[in-house]
Length: 168
Image (tube, rainbow, N blue to C red; front, side, top):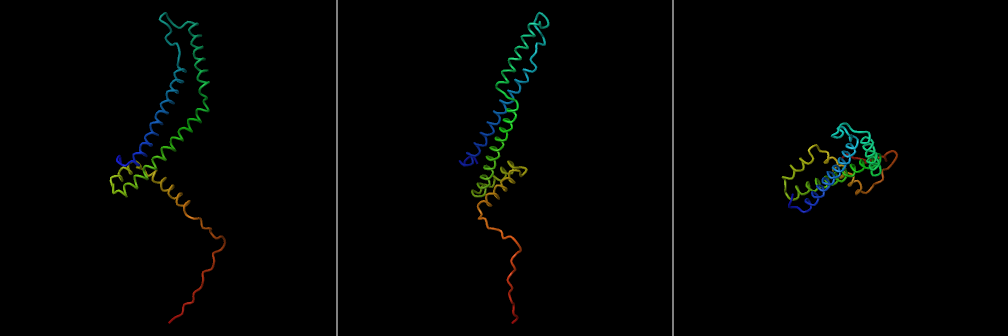
């Protein structure tokens, strides 16, 4: 598989999508951690001189308000949720497209180049048949688009012609 440039190219694209997804999730979780930390930020222990003074509490509230305003400027929660959902959907679409392409090419490669070992790779990548089912649907859609559309006659079927049979 690694010696075939076409398979390697598709595999590389698939891995790129995976790396971009992990980077995106890492940024998202870091932003959520920051938001969570701001919510828990308090002067629990005070200073070495004792519990927090009123001035320290006011300063803490001011810092929290500034941090919330800063986050509100850069992150709109409803927009973030819809944007996040769209991002996940985009990654799913890209990943599925590249994986389907890889499976289709592996299938062709395994049969045309007598690489029967690829069958085990295909079965491991598609252990539950999910992608095979999608490939079959995609193939059926492509064949329907390629086939000329013959108009289907409407109404009762035409009578079959009668043939006279004579005995000899």
